[in-house]
Length: 354
Image 1 (cartoon, one colour):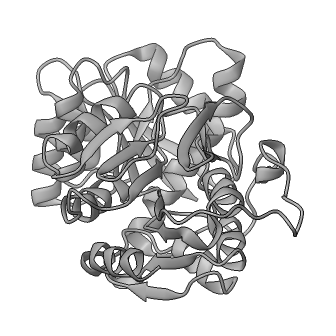
Image 2 (cartoon, one colour):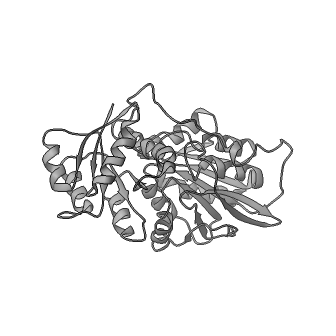
Image 3 (tube, one colour):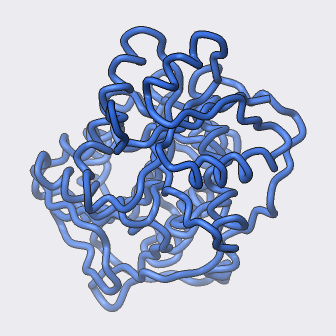
């Protein structure tokens, strides 16, 4: 069992989160706390595997608590926050201080949250636990059906091929990906090929994430909007809760942003982006799969490789969770496995050689 502590000043949020997590066969909530002081007292008698932590709380904010926790007794922490428009800097500071993931604060009383957001929150708990112990603790999980990219975009016919000469780079990441993407994107030169990124992140957070990256990178970074062109020196981040597909019209690459069911238990899904890239970019694409739990992106990366794309996986030593890259490697979908710090250089070299 994965033992969880929930720290949030809202009794309704604590109750709802407890209800959702306790419905999972491999997760149990062993304690809840209304603020960090309450949590500190309870940590004296019980130590959870994962902490779910609110940022905005009375008496002591979550960021201060996180810094104290990580300096004294590191435990995997997931930030649970409302819309990123308020306090987004604190959320991403928390990731720098050691938090492993972000989840959207529950929409109280909605069926959609129980059925769909509950799946993603439970998976975030499992990923956080895995980031510490490097293994899944339960052999039998009670989980919702996992859909494939077929529900968003059918598998193309074998003879589908579009001539193009412009390179495009697509990237997929999950747990630990916010910091990994920062390292990767800050190394890209302003004339690099266009990049499209899927980072598993809740709705409302991706715009703030893109803005933060834009302020530190040489390339331009923005949250993707429907019909945005994929251009040299530009990085498009898939918006939370929307799938992003790469499309092509003539010589122009662009993205389609659309709703749809969870694919590989995620929305946005890396598999959806990678499948569309295999279809519309083929041999002119470069695919990168980074740190994260699960297998989202592995099948799409295999489709990319079969279409002639060059594929790269982040190595185990530099991953927070070696799940997504490992699954892609197991399928034979990866051409090259490299440390995080070497991915950008390899992408540029391969884009010039294609």
